[in-house]
Amino acid sequence: MKKAFRNQCGFTFIEVIMAIVIVSIISVLAGMGLIQITNAYVFAKKNAVAAEQAQIALTRLTKELSAIQSIDHNAPATSATSIKYMRAGIWHTLTWGGGGSADPA
Image 1 (cartoon, rainbow, N blue to C red):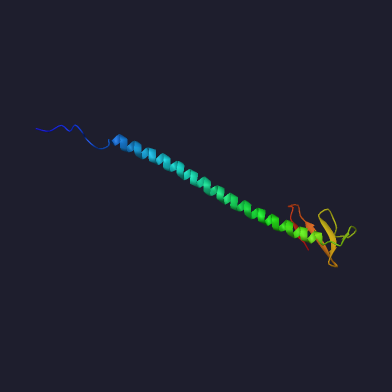
Image 2: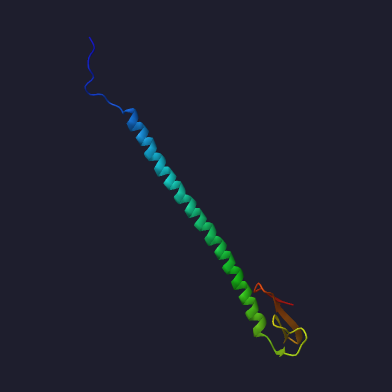
């Protein structure tokens, strides 16, 4: 004669499948969060590099232009995108293109 198991321990197949589904959903959400954190870090890093380059350019322009002794308004090189000036006894021409970059010559 077989004994009936009244107090069986364990999980049913449906319970195991539901646990796997729930863990999978949580894992996908956590992975998406990590990807967003990584993308935000990369964006912040690129932004910091661009800000540093802009600060260097502005510092260089400030030093260059603060030492101007004279500006030649009638020079042929002077146009809407350039200016000729004297600094330390030497004439320099500062030109810039449509992209907004400045290159002292």
